[in-house]
Length: 142
Image (cartoon, rainbow, N blue to C red; front, side, top):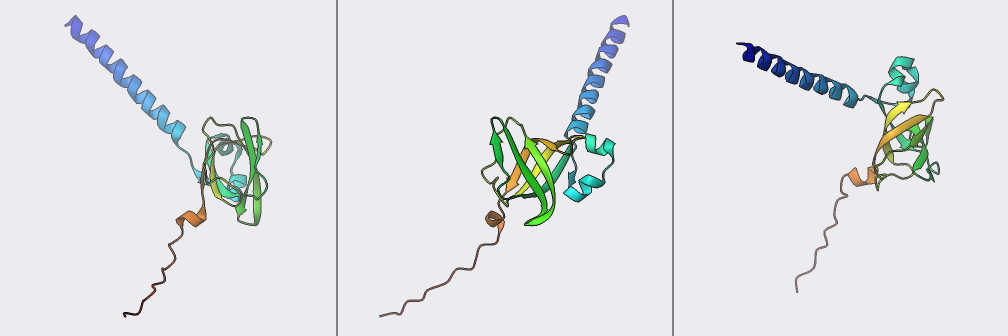
C-alpha cells in the first residue's frame, strides 16, 4: 500500500507540472491585435503585456542599424496616427516588408511610447488582390 501512495504522489506532481506549463504557455502566447488608436486608449497594465499592433509601414521610415530595425507604423495608409517601432528579433524580416506594406508587430509598448517588437509579419496588398480578367484573342480561321 505504501508503494501506491508514492506512485500516486509522483503522478500528481507530473500531471500538476504539465498543467502548470500548459497554462503558462497559453498566457505567454496570447496576444491581441490592436490598431494604433486602440493602443493609445489602453491602460498601463494592458500596455505592459504582450501586444500585436497593425498598420502600414510609413514610406522612408525603415532604418537598419546593426541587428535592430526601426520603422514607423501608421494607422491608415498615407496618413493617420503613427507609432515608432524597433525590431530586435532573431528572425529575418519578411520579403514583403517594405514601404506602404501592411504589417503586424508583436511585442511590448515601452514607457517612452516606442513599441519594441520581437516578431514582424508583413503582407503586400498587391499579392492578395484578385487576378485581373484575361483578354481573349480570337483568330480568324483560314
